[in-house]
Length: 310
Image (cartoon, rainbow, N blue to C red; front, side, top):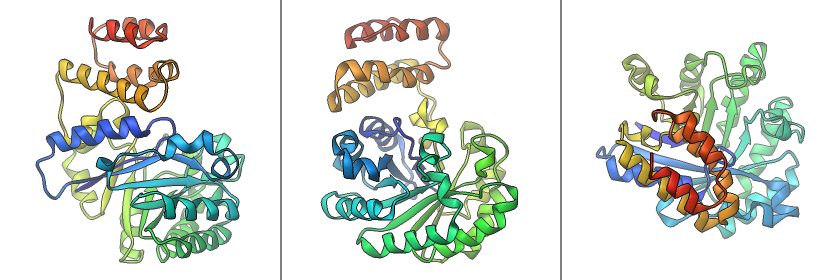
């Protein structure tokens, strides 16, 4: 089974991807298991007009391969320029178009899930982008805008597969947001209909529980990849089904924040790292107490003192 770390803005940066990849390489003993990484969302508008704002999203190390850069926006010319520049100047293994994110700030730009509204125009965009770059091209999308749109979206994905090397499907509609039951059967049917040269990734709330469900694993074995997002934020071991000791987890947390500081700057990352520490210590006794302490930290030394006294 092939696994993928989902693209998540302000989560799947260079530091966290390296943590996930290092854990995977340490414990994976299955030659048939591979891990695919995605970047954070790279704004084509930012790439064109404010490159300093997005340049850190494009950082990656050689040990992160295979890695795909996900871009988003609604303006074709900006997307085209960004895709071509990344194709020529960066050593990513592919470029992915975001056709799935439901965040209001992205949809207000008619990007992300909003691209599912005018499917014909988006298909033209996909074809042009795919034809214009040398690297493999892919998209991530949803099962539709709402339940009545699922059939149209099904046809859209089948047609898009003619221009894509890979398609990731979040098996919920836009109206479901991040809740509600996912439609695995929808994705399994897609697998039978899409271009056989196009690989298919199933994305949903894949977690420790679903990965221990034999029925689920048997079904997804008919797909090419499964993608894990939210459940990986507090558990980079999820891809290798390992339950680490607190000592190991603590060492990984410490390495993670130091990598974050390495690629950015301390004050910013001690503060931004709170979203990770909130989930990393989810199962620690008196977790709420320690969370409150971490919320007050604004430097690396104080962070270390709290962490190594848990």
